[in-house]
Image 1 (cartoon, rainbow, N blue to C red):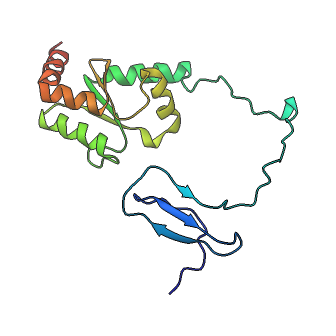
Image 2: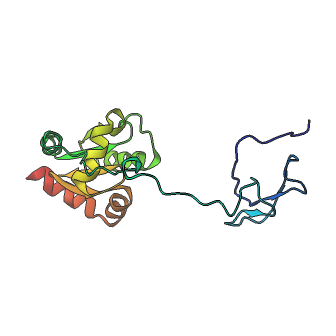
Image 3: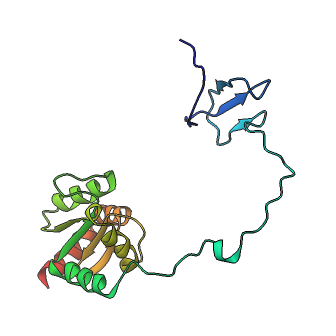
Amino acid sequence: MALRSVKTPFVTPAAVVVSSSIINKPQSFRFVSKPTASLAVHQPIYNINPNLKLKPSSPAARFRCSASSALTPQLRDTLEKLVNSEKVVLFMKGTRDFPMCGFSNTVVQILKNLNVPFEDVNILENEMLRQGLKEYSSWPTFPQLYIGGEFFGGCDITLEAFQSGELQEVVERAICS
């Protein structure tokens, strides 16, 4: 069965070379065996006038970014209470029993290996919590581990601290205080 048209572009680990002798004909794809970072296009895919001049939009129609913060005072108070409610709190994608990403799973497995009692909070259930927590911790990714009410780090930092033995010391100090 022959491929007649491709409606959506796709990317493979190998580079895709697009070739066509006439722009209105269906294009053929040739996969290059050696992966490269570029996409080689021999002819333009769309017939776009290169001399096209765009006029600026009116000031009222321009896109404006609002400086609103996802971290409201109420959310900040809630996060502070949550972070201080237990000695170890993990904000993660999913739950300790069903992690929804590999990084969250790694931190859960580390904490379970150390037999650390911890509270898990699924950030996927509340988008406002997820965005506000990024501002609260000044950390853009998840999971986020808090120990003794203080931000400890994400997956990579937690893994390094676990391998060096530092994590166990920090957790023991927080639990015993």
